Image (cartoon, rainbow, N blue to C red; front, top):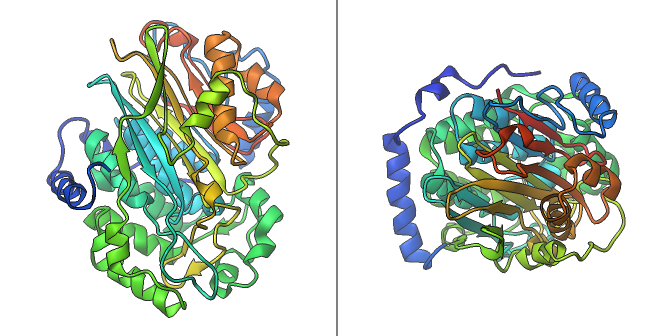
Length: 457
């Protein structure tokens, strides 16, 4: 099942914040002070066009794309196609890059839970075109106090981090960024190549969990997958705000559901797991800054790639439990996120009644970092990317950025030639700046992966 555009109500919220968002802002401020200082047919056709277009010439609004001279540029890229389309629809409805990234985060929790469920950990970076500054949001894996049937799992902190990111940098109403994912879960979507590949690689790992078997047991490419329990969770988050997930009635229900499954996740633990919001790790590049996620995320690996160190390891063939996505809006705002389940399908346990696949506290889950390059002097945007497929994807992102931005190479050519070594890379680049020369902007999803890049009209 395919959606049409996002609700037309989205188009009515370009300026100002609604009362619910203001309430969320106040709530998040209080919590931070208390907790810490900061805290598919058509797609296959498009992929074929992209593969036949190594010169990276203008195509349709999916895949490697450019815009005509004199027009504005806005784009998304993600590890899974339907999520990238959700981000594009948010941009077309008047949302900014942060709104698109928030919507893609929730959409991926539905369409690619093997790498990006609500139980995933990760990191995001936002470049705000108004303040001309960048901010990082890190939600690192933290082991829950009690394993589920002997399986350790991580405390879900992503919803809290994404809520804070939206409060600080979003433009649309909160519920408008969550509703596309809720509809995908409630009414279903056709399973993409990305999720199908993960199921082929690791679906058997879910065999020990009855709830996971019930939801994903018959998943294959093109099959309609509905997730009503997850839709209920997303509906509560949409209606009551992200805080509902870590301290409201939903948090209490989720804690009880984990207990019924044999694990332990007290509400106090959910409340105490505060993400880090801080200045990103950065280095200079002429008049611009290269931004990466600070520790405990893998921004240092991004900078190693930026300095010319190619990532080790073979070519990725599935998500490996890692996914990346990014968005750029027409004003030069950018947002990029990299998330991880710790391993393919995370802890391989779905909490009954919630539809949430839990993440694994595997230390490799922290091996993520997106990357943004922008000019803090004038707010000009140059590059945004995030990777998936392997723990080395962060370094692969830095290396691709070096080749495209510093060495002035063609994005499509760089992605095609690296053959997913060390992971997949999904990127958006404006070599001469988005405002300076928008017709030179490009976006690309790694051709070895199963993701998608789109241009917003």
